Image (tube, rainbow, N blue to C red; front, side):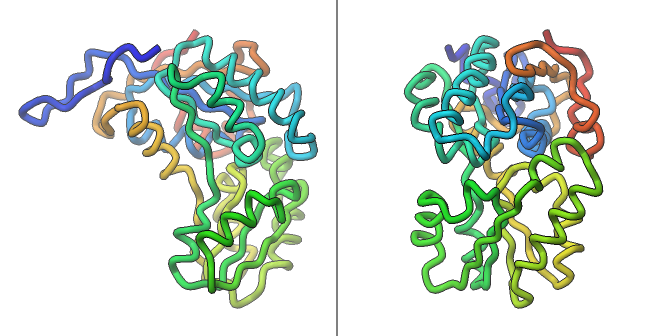
Length: 277
């Protein structure tokens, strides 16, 4: 599946822009925007494929088997476009479907999961709060992250029912209600908040304002974007020409960025120089 090692650095440090780079990202909805914007910042010339599932979202209330089935369908739609790497820009899909996705697509297409940034948050000493969907909160997956990376640090798991869905629809009133409710469950002494759902990164400043005390917010988008490039052998080139195309897939159908995506800075950043196909 790999076409080459794209955009290698030459002997004089110059970057060869002759090869095209294609990076796919998948999620149930627009939670993939934060990671996609981070990828665009690292490679403005990369062609992006954004594969989401408006027909089947939200994934959070589904069974693990149901999540896996939907995630495989979305991943297959993205894989049909021949990407160099696929980013699973969804915590729920990473928890339940990552092994199945890797079993089907690798080694032809490297598959990168999204893990809540518990480790860097705990490194600051805590107390730490983890905001996540109800399905992820208290899950064995999240508990394992806490046990491995936050030993000796006070951690509060904060469920955020309805927040991802509200963000996906850019419903300001619903976002405010969900953020306010989660902030009320966050201890006042909290020093760091892990944004354990990719959707939450789109409203990070609203979360910070609602908490009302100085906190450090830890998202995953930047780290996931950098890991995707590393796994695919693609060198970062933030000064590359902004020639990357954009292909949007909604439950396998070619579409345009939804209006709700353009309500966020990350979505507006993805407007392509030329349209994908």
